[in-house]
Image (cartoon, rainbow, N blue to C red; front, side, top):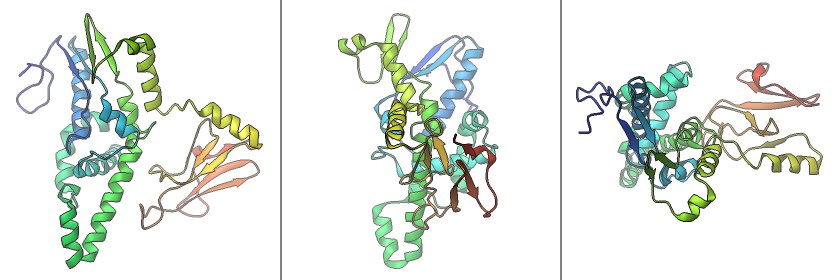
Length: 289
């Protein structure tokens, strides 16, 4: 309608020097969220080449998902997260290729997903539980897998959270201001650029509490901390200047049923053991002095 998107299904930018602005809440609105984000990113690349531009403004539902608040997520959207991670693997973990191209292949993944969570309903689970306990367990397992996948993608520092971090919460274009829910004088007094920077900083996973972590470790006389609690889809990893190790990989059959991993600490060196007992990832080897 606006003349910025081709009508032939090829998803081509036809807006020339037009500036397109989307004002948030793409998330929690259906089963094709990542595909929509992917389409907008693709159009942004095309628009820039043609002298135009595509901007997005983060809404409260983008913030909620980065916070881990999934109350309004469509069940099928959890499946999309699982499928997207599979697509990312198929693309050799090349983020740009995987993300920009997702809107073109997402339907294929959806069709191939025989356990589509979009078919999940509480009534269906109750019905299946009376006839097929195995099916019930499969559905619950699939739902858990979807939640873990979404958590991995949208947590602060996650791949999609970092993508959202590219977008402002308040955007000024010429004499127009764009934001998701409104702007008040005290927001302006606080500082628009400051606000945008702080939200982006948080979404990228740059934890302002890193200094607190350092002070805590210094106070207790330790060099690093090891924690569990939150399953890590990417495996054991370290954050906060390699001071915090996150080692829960969800190996329980009641969570992700993933392959076991071990954090080995010897001679002030930490390394991650994966698969076979004598294998480890050199990139995860850290020496503390």
